[in-house]
Image 1 (spheres, rainbow, N blue to C red):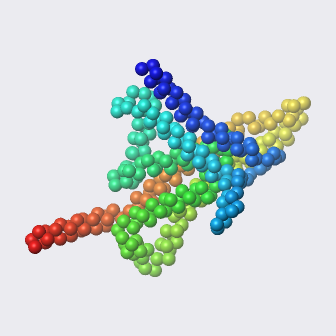
Image 2: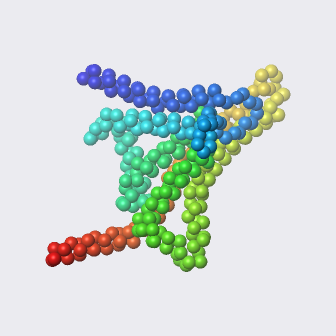
Image 3: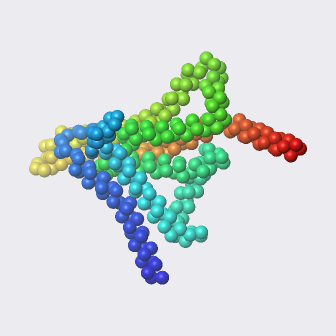
Length: 306
């Protein structure tokens, strides 16, 4: 029993290390690839490596791509940690927390998408976790992948594929005919609206996260200059110490880096649920399904008579 308990604890420790290690790796990469600079420095994701000998164009590996994979490893390790030692009847705080998360995700999906999309809970939970954890990387001075339009654009494209898939549930003709509703003259506008869906999702998420980072950096730097102007007359190091940077940037970080990051993850998940469930023509689909079922029964009865 003691041996099993020690193995259990050892695996727990290993999973915790696997959660923290990707963050340490990201910080190490940041230190190695970031050149020394003075003043305000707002830049996009830095290029880590470029594969030049590629068929179409060079393959560029950026900071945002690496950080995304590191976040995925951390989230995967967190899931393994939560599910390690799971039982039918919860007897640990860890399992109680896990069950609470699962119940909330199931309730969120059930309330916004309906019973037909109940299996979407893991996907929506993944979107929220990946988006929130990616944005929160800025708390450690790392480049958040959600500040890269290419990363968020990939998520939006995946959602758009799901939207199109469920619109095609009633067949290609039903999908094409939908562009002519309510009148044919609005078909070009409906087509533009269809294309604008992933674009608006990507730019909304990307813009909000990036703007929060930019505002935080500008205000922090401005407070340093203001502190030098107002308190520069103090003797010695006191005149150089940025007193106004104490506390105020932390409050801004609590909003832009924590609250806003979690809020944007929630909004992206809500838009995903709304667009996917709204794209599914449930009434027409079930009518079509029932018609096919009745047709099969009729055909079977005719064959039996013959």
